[in-house]
Image 1 (cartoon, rainbow, N blue to C red):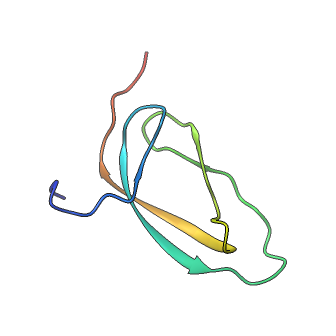
Image 2: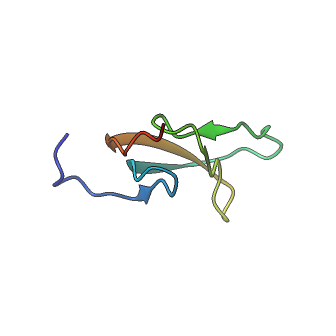
Length: 65
């Protein structure tokens, strides 16, 4: 993908860029941990409106040694 795609989220750990889709969550749905595909730092799984967040990587960040 190119940089012309809208960026909704940037990982604080490595700068990886993601497009985020919000999906309405059903009540009582269990929480799942989501991690950055580049640095493995945790990413928010839901928003304040009880939507599930789905991340699509559009730009890799810097890998830390």
